[in-house]
Image (cartoon, rainbow, N blue to C red; front, side, top):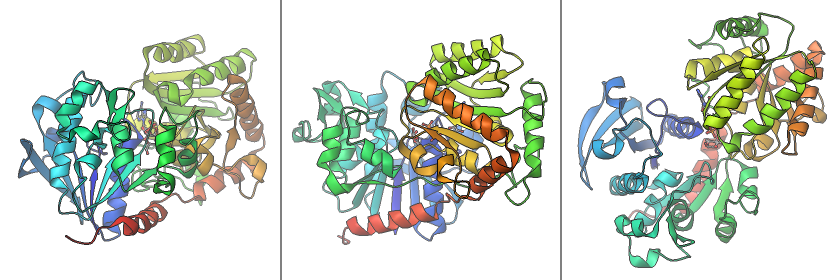
Length: 461
Ligand code: ADP
Ligand code: GLC
C-alpha cells in the first residue's frame, strides 16, 4: 500500500515525547513490511544542520519548500520548510500555533492526493482530515493524547479555507471555538488511539476530555491499537548509551549499568539497595504529584531505596523534584532537562520504573523498561494497564506491579510491594525475565493497521 503519515514530530528529527517515537517506528515498520511510506513533518530549526543528506524536492502549495530524505528503503521523509512558522526554538507553545499547524495541514493535504491511505496524528495534523473531504483516499486519524486538542478562537476557522458549513457543532466547532482534534475525529474514516483500554476510556466523562459524546458518536470507527517498540533504538544488547550490554539470556550486565548510573548522578554506589527510576514530561498527566507524595512518605519512614528522576516541564514540579533531591542527596538524584542518553541509562540502571500516570494513552517508557529489566510499577490506566501484568497473576506471567487509586497512598503501597519483591531475588529475577522476554515489537501493530486500512481503502479514482 501507499501510505502517507503526517506528524508534527518524528524521531530522530524532532521530539518532545512518545509521538515522535511512535510515528517514526510505525512508518519504519510499515516500510520494512513492504509498503511505500511517506512521512510528512515540519522542518524545525536545526534539522537541516543535523541531517546534511536532505535534498530539495520542490515547492508545496501553500508556498513552502519541501526537503526529502530517504533514511531507508520504502521510506521517504518530507520536511515542510517555512522558516516563518517552523524556524523556532520550541516545537509548540507559540501564540500563532493555530496558523502554524493550519499551514502544515494544508501542505500535507496537497502532498497527500496520490496516496491510498493518509494517516494523520494528533491535533497538529487533525485538519488534514477535513481538508481531504472530497479526495478519494482512506483517512485515518490517530489520537496519541486527547488532552491536547488544538482548540482556538473561532476567528481562526477562516484561515483553514474550509467551507463555512464545517463550523458546526457536528464538525469542527467546539463550545464556540474551533477544535483541530475534533475535526480529525469527525472527518476521518477511522479513528484510532494507542491502546485498547484508552479507546474505552475516551468514551467516559472522566477520560473523554470533554469529547466523550464525539467519541461515542464514532461507534465502531474508534479502535485502540497498542503501540509497539522500535527495538533497534531501544535495546540493551547493542546500545551506545549503556555501560554494559545484557539481555534476558545474559542478565549480568544490568548490575554494571546500575553502578554506572549511581556514579553518573552522584548517588552512593550501593549494590543491594533498590533503585527506582522515572523519566517524564512534568505535566499533570504523569502523576508527579503523587510520586512526590509517595517518595516523601517512604523517605520519611526510613525505607531504604534510591530514586533517580529525569524530566522537565511545569516549573513547580521541577522545583519540587529538585527540592526532594536536595533534601535527600544520598537517596534521590534528579536531573531537570531533556537527555536521551540518560533516559536509556535510567531504564537500564534502575531496578523498578515508576509510572503513576493519571491517564496514559499508551506509554512507551513502561514498554522500554520491560525490555531493560526495570520492573514497571504503574497505575492501571490506558496502555499501562494493557501492557503490564501484575504480580497477582502469578510468577509465571507477572511482569510488573499495578495499582488503581490515583493517590500517593496507593502508589506508596505499590512501591512497598516492589521493595518486598526486591527482597526476594529469585522471584524478582523471574518477573524481570518475564518482562525482558515480552515482545512489543511493531509486527502486531503493523498487521492490525493493514487490516484496518484494507477496510477503508478507496478504489483508485
Ligand atoms: P509521553 O509521550 O506522554 O511523554 P511516552 O511514555 O509515550 O509518554 O513517551 C515519552 C518519550 O519521551 C520516551 O521516549 C521518553 O524517554 C522520552 N522523554 C520524556 N522526557 C524526557 C526527558 N526529560 N529526557 C529524555 N527523554 C525524555
Ligand atoms: C502520547 C501519550 C503517550 C503515548 C504517546 C505515543 O504522548 O501521552 O501515552 O505513548 O503519545 O503514542
